[in-house]
Length: 77
Length: 560
Image (cartoon, rainbow over all chains, first blue to last red):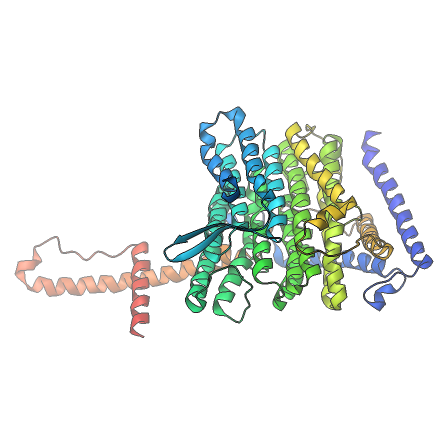
């Protein structure tokens, strides 16, 4: 039972986050969101930007491991 | 009386007296000294202490609307650090911490470049002992590198100040530009301590090597002192906008792959400084307010995050993400405090990061700087990645933990609790923060547009994280070293220098041998000298060869 604590927490967290995300997108349709730059006023633009940025950061970071990652004792050698 | 006593000086004096104070009274004495120093906050604005020496007029204590917010937050940070380290019995670290905080506060009140230089070096010389108190071989090595870099920054500042005095006859803190040579020296001196791109290696090198409590002290002062100095001397310098934008973006990628969570926080610290530097570069009243506000709230939530990781290190013995996880069960309060810090730095509405970052973003938007605006917006998703998600997730959740650990000691919880309270209080009531900013600006961070836009960004970035974890695309934590700009002086220069000097050494060696041989031949011709044993030409050692080559180079320079 105890071993499933984290899993069930993760599941309910995912559920709530998805609901909040959906609500935020729906809210965008109820009013005109003023931004400094007109293209950012497209429905769900910040959401899209956040999602893509995040994936990009993680993927590029993962790729950079090829060049930047060394053994833990690299500087001691 | 007390009104022209330099703020922070009392803390330095107390730090020297600490060894004479019994163990149990040391922390109360430290708190008392911070309290006494904080009385200066009520002095108002003006110049309170000058000193004519060697024909120079040093302004040792001045205060204005830019000094005050920094002075307030430096005192708060000092108090947090002292409470957090209440359980610790390391005299050297306590002395260094108190003197370091005092020097940083003193530096804020310097009115000319020479007084600033004195405090600038004082912060370097005191803080190096905090790194040293990490008490591992890695910490001691890092401390030496840290000292070299910090002192170099001071030397550059001194060169700049001397050049300025020589060329203009003035050495007071004033707005400079990069068209003058002294301006460039001072700019680089500040840039080293503000961890500009490629000058940032010392930060990620030394901070994570310090002790549980030492890192918290380090995170608050040096870099923010540099931000203050930049805000005072280089507001509106265009190149700072780009430097700052690069600073916000590049540490993000390093933080993704770094395994040591305190080093992740050091990269994150670098990224936060970028936001402040952009604000200075724009140089409007709104953006400078943004920089000061950001520095103010940043010191609190960054200290909170470092404190929570310090507590983890104290109890679990490591901050390596690959070895942590599942601590939420055993350290519930630390978990909550860490999440509050994480939400603040990620700039969730109702947390302190939101009300400060908004000022900088609005000034960028108002100026129509679309590219920089979206670099910072992108970097905001990056902040959420490394500080908002990675830190709490890998330390407290990720997977179940087998060994039990205890909750953090009560003094740590109190310090974290105060910091967490401030994070939320400032987020909910931003007007109190706005009141102490340098310029009066009527600004409302909580507009529906702004809140929704920020929430969409953050929530969908979290969804992206869940998506990556679900499909096993999120990189697993690996025990490793991530190369950073300190690589240049830790690997590249020794890599070139050592063989080069060895070769030169061999060359000079053979030169001397031949010289010695020919000497002997000449001398042996004379019977008188041939039996005298004291005439011997010995070959020089490694140090000797370096000395001789330096002398040789100097000779060449003089001749040319």
